[in-house]
Image (cartoon, rainbow, N blue to C red; front, side, top):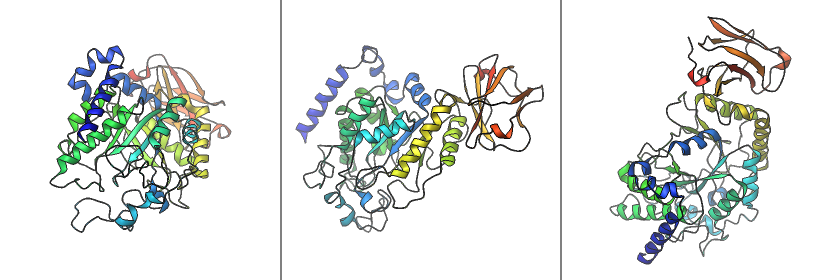
Length: 432
């Protein structure tokens, strides 16, 4: 154990020694910096707007929810799954899980085809099973007892780096499999947690985000300040979420849309199906539902991380893959109204919402109503207007309102985007 820790320290030191000069000469030694991402890191992530979340593991053999379908390990366990799969069954699924059709490049290519600019890969959920070659436990995908031995993290990291897709790591602090978790020896578990995060950030090349999931635990539960500082001493450009007892860099509303907010970055994490792991014959969201989610997040100032759950054999289910490709096809036509934009200047309403960039406002009409669309009046002047994908429209600006009329034949079935060019930056425009 001590020898392993020495190796991690050497690895981290070598990694830090290779950092760009701008980081090594100042920022990385600033404690405040290590607890918060720099504006340029947040900016690329907000510009990206759309990511693919991937949750996978031996639990896919059961078709039940990851982690939560595991039964309790002992009757008085305060935290843990309470599902129908007995612990002795759940914890041994990896001994018969053989996803021999797993192809990391196909996963990453699908993310690119969908228009996703980053991927969030689950490497450990609350059940404690690790999809990477950790030295700290044999409960992992490279275990001698595993029926299928692959370092999934390495495979996906290599594929993301080759394809230019930024990679986030999902790591659960709770671990219902670890014998020290939430016991009098919890401090020893925290050392394990920090050691695993160090491994993940030291051994797989550049990682752009850390997506933690602490189930409401406090910063003290995970020694969060030291965890953040250690993580950014290895990869100083990390963007880290808010689930470690600290504010982090962005909020994470789950299975729901965030509200309009431009003063604090956020990302809605939403499943394409109905749970966070593969389910046979699951209901998946329609293309219209997916576009509504993506557009509404962008209009309200947030990102969308849309989750897919690969099948037991390693493939992403064909109908889920088809849905992602349909989203990508839509983004090829409408992407300029999503990528690199910010929410506003008008707040979202029942008909849709707006995004903006520079002097341009994109009016996203998700539900066209009879007559004309009326927006509040603004202090800026509209100097040009058009439909993003072509067609005719009429825009009338008065001191009382902005009125938009579009013939029925030019109203898109998913999202009709009206482009308004202003005589000043859209971020400076105020509704009257």
